[in-house]
Amino acid sequence: MTADITLRGPDEVIAVLPYQLGYHPRDSVVAVALRGRTMGMVARADLPPEEHAAEVATSLVGPLVRDGATSVVVVAWEEVPDTSTALTLALVEQLEGAGVDVVDVAVVRDGRRFSPICAERCCPADGEPLRDPTTVPAVAELVALGRAPLGSRDDVDRLVDPGPRSEVLGRVIERRAHRSPGRRRWARAWAEVLADDPSVPVRDVALADAVLALADIHWRDGLLAWFSPGVLALRQVDDEVVRHLRATVPQGPSPAEEEPAVRTDGPSLPLRLVALCRAVPDRCTAEAVAICTVAAHVAWAEGDGAIARAALDRARRIDPEYRLAGLLGRLVDAGVRLPRGPGRPHGDARLRSVG
Image (cartoon, rainbow, N blue to C red):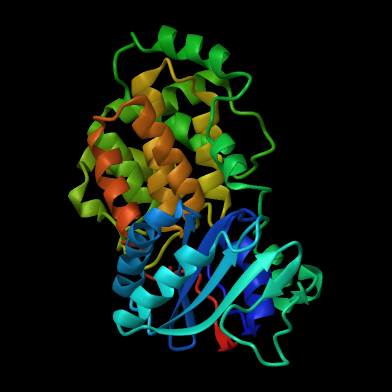
């Protein structure tokens, strides 16, 4: 998904951030990296105890600097007055020490915006009421692109938790796990999962075969190359896997790998994979950890850090030794963004002015 969105001032930045994060932050500090007039990484952390403020600030500054931030906007959300002060001050100090200009700092509390760095008449001590998001053009543009923030970070975590029918699918997975491997069957299953009309229910046997296929590392890596062509080239994938994908799965890069072909784009692909995560119970350990890791990989490549972290957290909870989840987790923790392939730039927002 791409977006060219203009933001005017801190109120519009605050209004847009829940749509960038995917949920409404609470008791958090968010740092928005700016590369010139382009909005880059959006990094967030929970408010820690005061004695851990410097440590948490360091964990945020490193990824922001690696992302190429030339300046940063810092926004803190707090329920209790001054609980964000220690982390905010530590973050500003470390950013400035790293040569990054802090353009603005805002604190959000009780529906109002406060400025801890400005005592002028433009920033009254009792704060300014937050702007109604429906009046912010950038929010309307993000809504049109399919962005809709959830109520909290916990709501994002619940997106990847096993759903009410997961035990039913678990039994189907167990029955079909004893069948001989079949890449043709797996390709048909993935084609059904990714069918153009998501309103048509996917059969349980197709869901089961789709996740069972991920036990084949060549197949799993082939899907990752198919979904995120900038991360792994198809020429590095098993030839038989590529043939089956090209014959049956409608999404993926073109044969020349120069332009992305017709594919499930934007939020629909990560959310379809999230739905598959919810379909698999934790007791199907291998299948659950594999689909959660694939979902996290695609979400991170698409720029959706909230879903990526939620899926990774579940994967690492189920199997801390799953190697791909560990590797991807280190990339996410370090803020290293995956390339999105030819013709698929990150959905950065264009900033006209902030401050």
